[in-house]
Image 1 (tube, rainbow, N blue to C red):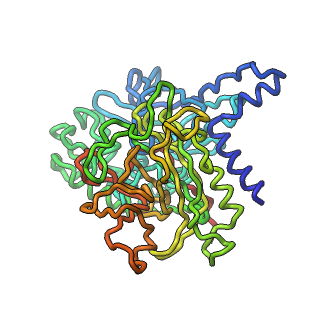
Image 2 (tube, helix red, strand yellow; image 1 turned 60 degrees about the vertical axis):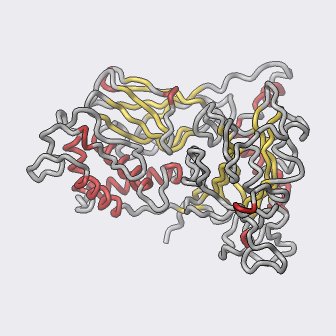
Image 3 (cartoon, rainbow, N blue to C red; image 1 turned 30 degrees about the vertical axis):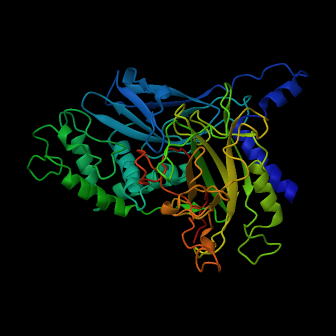
Length: 502
């Protein structure tokens, strides 16, 4: 059983990275020196017929990060095409086509990565899923596509907690678009006011510039009312509108009508680990972090990660359920690198869950075994891990964040997005570093970090102010020593499974 599960995990990791291709190619050609062919690209095609030639076409990841290399313009009849690197998968990509006064939106649910470089490249027409089935509304960027895209973006944005389309699988998005089509086809009174408002706002002459914002700031409207032409009456009451109030109210009512199922894997969870390697990071003592206190910086280095399931994770050999069996425990630890340094790379190239290439935020995702332990003070699945700044295969010395310690994390979903997302600052010795933690006593430090299950009731003799930074956590975006927002710069969603029919 160990072998089977380990092979499955390792195969998945290799296919997503195409890392096995040079070995396969060399074997097939009887040579270790023949280079493999390039991975190439997959192409997305679409059209914005109402805008014609010369409209600006932009692509965004599901969290709103622009995909700058895919930007293009429309040609004859509003047709466009964009190439996506075949080394990585893209899910729920947002497309906008903008003219001087109007913009239309759409969604590409999935652009898959090639499993090997020898696979043929794909051309994916908007409106068609990769299995050939239709994607409702998306064959053309028009008013219907814009309304449907707006509803899905707003449903996630206005959720509690706030979310993005990264939290939905491509299949869930396709199902949701079909549900929207049913609601509009039935002229559902909860949806039709919004549908009619969007049509009026997108009418020629109704706006001075594109009025809809696909990724508004928190608390801002999806409608920029200042872009409306002076005489525009978008709600149809006979009076020109000067604010977004009526639109916002209609949008909330329409969102409430959406009812589609998304089912998540009950025994696995996607873990996204991000490490901020930018200069000037501030730790929980409000002190600037020295990234190179223990690490030597040399040309050619990159970020790696290593770790394993933590030894305190409930093991079915010794613990009562819920627990992880030994075979699954060992396979998951191997997937994380099993404490071999500088073997498992992280990514800063907008692939493998990384949101923005070259921003010095390095990302990796792991699909790990999981269970719901119920109580916050119970033992959940736990991991230990550590970042290294090194070269492939190098030893610990000069590459690790710090010697003799690890970061610890319990896989408890605090945000309700069915993922575990943790963003760390490289070299920060005041957060979830376990045994020799430098968090000041005034900030809750006592020299170590405790699991949540060790806090209540406290073990006899334990100091009550020991920090418990072992869960998902907000981050300090503006370096003012205040944790104010959840991490959002990643481009993967949770693990979903087909919903069982009731």
